[in-house]
Image 1 (cartoon, rainbow, N blue to C red):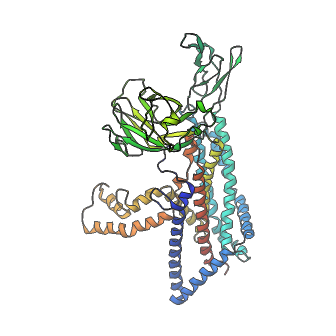
Image 2 (cartoon, rainbow, N blue to C red; image 1 turned 180 degrees about the vertical axis):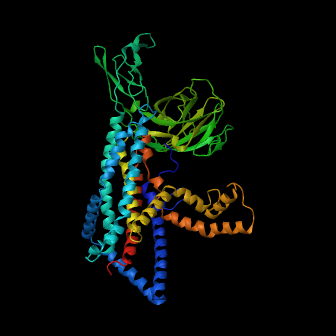
Image 3 (cartoon, rainbow, N blue to C red; image 1 turned 180 degrees about the horizontal axis):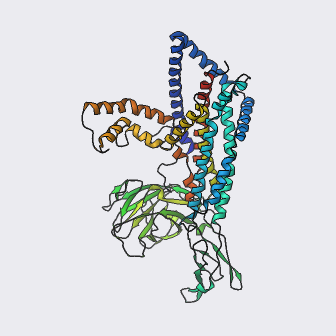
Length: 609
């Protein structure tokens, strides 16, 4: 799975931050203070234009002081009453139609989704979760953007504001009410999606008795059988059985089956195993050694524009080295101490400069090394499976390069609990590509159902933020305008990083004005603009006006692309709780901030005055 940014522990992310950024809490405080100051300036400017400079200041002070007092006096009972009203309003709008659309999509999905795919679980999970995401966001958009404008148009709002209900309670109540509706919809979609995926991937095989071949041991005696299963779901499995007739098939299309002898030459094949997983990885730190033996932070480039992975060349000293912390035999607790192993997983990206030997995989080796004593194990060879998760159970009993027997956890793991894993490519003219997350220590798998539920929580977080934005902006503009604003908010949220790159100058081609000039003159983004008065004015406009505004707007935008955890479920990885807590905290921050902003916008609007 691609991990471009390291996931920080929750409290570190919240308070101190990392990766060159400050903590989320200080960042929220700075953004909140900046928005509050901007709102005060704009509010005073409007009041001064209406009432004069002095009177405008009095009106602004009175509005802020009374508003803060009313926010403190918010009644949970009245908020819940407004929330129930919002739920009833959603039901009247037939929001359940969204469920009908979703079930209709699932009904015809099997026509286009194939179980013969190399990893069908990934295909099915990404489809149902992505469909749920977009459908829930559309429902959240329509509910929130047209609610208050509809009340303004039908005069229903007058029956609410004339009662002892504060403006803040109206905003918060509607956000909570619509969020409850979204929660119920998403829960139904999530349960239905999981059942759909499990049922669609379920299949059964039989054993082809005519395919049996005797497997002999070193003495020539029969030690078991090998053969193939019957063909089902567009695939079949090879397997090897022990002397008792029990065994497990090889992995095919991302899953296996167990085979059990039931006597009289008959066998029972289990349902598919491993389709839906929740791997729990422990990542290390990656560094490289080049072909000359020099230490490097990255490998070599093979011309790929995406620099996520770098490569090592084969049949040279070039090596990829991972350093893992907190390594001990306790990582494999369900196995007797003498049989415990180091459970590794490796993803290799293969780059060929020639075809090599047709039908033969590229060869690589894995070695373990103590980072302190430099004691190194004998190399373990493997066949490189391009972009596939290759799992290794490296036994406790190892041999050093001098053929002395050593203990993996006592001799190759340092006293600080560190171990180094070295990977090389053996084929000349071929390359292995790695990123830091391409090798990890495998902890026992988590619950796939729990991981799936966490993905649904990430979808829920996005929907609640959309609801909060829609309710807030709808206090100021009409329904269609509010909908367009929220759509723009969502689009910018999905492309927030590109927005930030333009604002900070990391993106080629300059700012908005410079891009217009380049389009008009057909100038390449890598070409420096000529030093003319017009071009200097354009670049100055971007530098001192457009880019600062873009940067300020980007600080208020949520990164919707970072919220999505669909890849975790589709790739078969457990969603960390730190990620869930971070998303929930961000959601809470947006709800609180937008509720306060929506309160002042609604309070200053002339409603029932």
